[in-house]
Every structure is written in C-alpha cells, then in structure tokens.
Image (cartoon, rainbow, N blue to C red; front, side):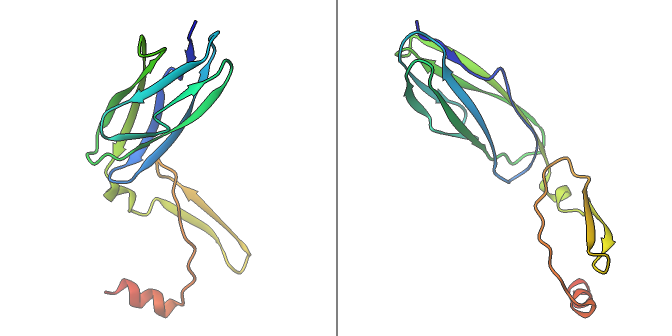
Length: 147
C-alpha cells in the first residue's frame, strides 16, 4: 500500500511583499511499497524537487519558494499526486504579505555603545530582519542624511 506522510499545513507567517520567501517541509513514505510522487501549486510558488521516488521509510526535504506582490492574506494549496497518480492529497498553505515599504521603516532599536563593547539590537518587526553594521563618522552620516 502506498502512503505518504505530509505536513498538515504550511504556514509562512508574515512575509514582505515583492521579496522571495522560502520554507522547507518533508515528505515521507510510510507505506509498504516504493512510491513515486509529484507536486503542483499555483504560479506564485516554486518547489524543489517537484517529483521523485521514495523507497519504504525514506523521506525527502522539499523547499517551497514564494514571491507575492500584494499585501493581503493568501491561501493556497500544494497538490500531492502519488501511486501512479491514482491518489491525490493536498497541503494547505497560508501566508500574510505585508507591504515591503513599511518594512523599510526603522523597527530596529539599538541599545548600548561602542565604548561599552556591547550593543543590543531589538527587532520589533513581524519578520526576520537582516542588517549590516556600518561604521561611519558623524560627518559621513550627516552628509548622507542631508541629501
């Protein structure tokens, strides 16, 4: 008997508009025979790998990559076909897209000073934030922000 273990739901949480986001999940063959599988979804999501074969007890990690433009909550699904397309299952997905413009606002605060050799950065965004530490003189900073 062919049986695949798949996630109950894939929740991407909050993501920025017009920025790629990624989530990994696992598909596992919990059946009693080798099984071929393939995935499909709407155009906003890419998956890698999209198909494969699993022996009994084997699993595979699948990456799903999304890119959405409009700020709103999206719901979609991944269709899972297996056992020579005789069986079909679905994985519901949801993601809330936040306007990327608002994410560019300063929602990071910095406590401490270089003299103390300790700086704490607090993230008040609803997303993970990547930042780069750049040291500038006061003159460079003023020149950059006065134009």
